[in-house]
Image 1 (cartoon, rainbow, N blue to C red):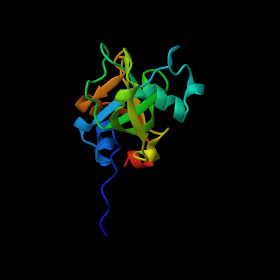
Image 2 (tube, rainbow, N blue to C red):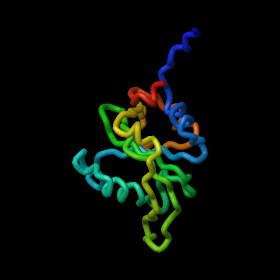
Image 3 (cartoon, rainbow, N blue to C red):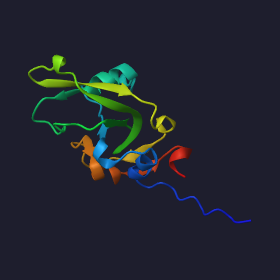
Length: 153
């Protein structure tokens, strides 16, 4: 009988995302912070509040991409520079009828993708709290510090 090889823990977010069939160009990783004009504390982290806060983005002058990708992976604050997976949205595009002079709003639909990792997957966001959104390979190389059993195979 052959002994299976040892299981190597996942070290990078990209390893988990690849297992879920994501590709870097289709993913936006967002880390919300607690602040007065948004999610003020953990008590505000509800499905409706997070979706409402995530779907509204500045029209210009922000760090958000002009043409955001299909998948938005949302993290909420944990401890220090860490962020915990909250949900994955599928972006169905901007709702142009809701656009204002300063903001645009997206049709985000929650998915079951990575559902087994919600509240279990924790990443080290790094020391750049101003950069609340990462895409492509910048998101892929984020360090995983905790994960559920499916994420640490």
